[in-house]
Length: 154
Image 1: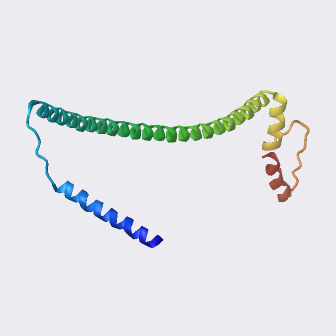
Image 2: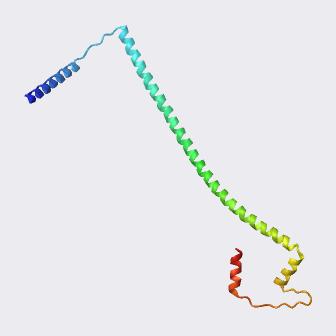
Image 3: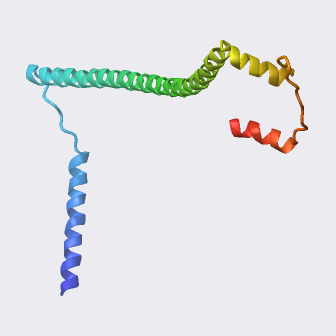
């Protein structure tokens, strides 16, 4: 019994679809009066307005997209430039510190070179100069000790 009800419902649907198709095939003639023409003109105007509005919005959206891409690429390029300059700045600061250390050492050396006692000691050590009555003895230097001394200074 249940199956029969289902079949009859499907049959009704098929018949109703056939009726709808027949109704769609019939053409209705339109009345040609001033009101109908004015409504058709108004619909055509609204349709044209929608098309123009869609075109304007599309162009505006495209312009916004292009501007956004341009701004984004500019920001990206500037970020890259800033990071490169920051890295160069860090390198320059490190070099500045080294130069300042070297300058401090040179200032100390200038002060020492202005001292006559230091100059005399330096002349005795490097040029084997002596004061009257002094005898200079040179001793052989151990190469390992000479190599260690510069490493300790660094």
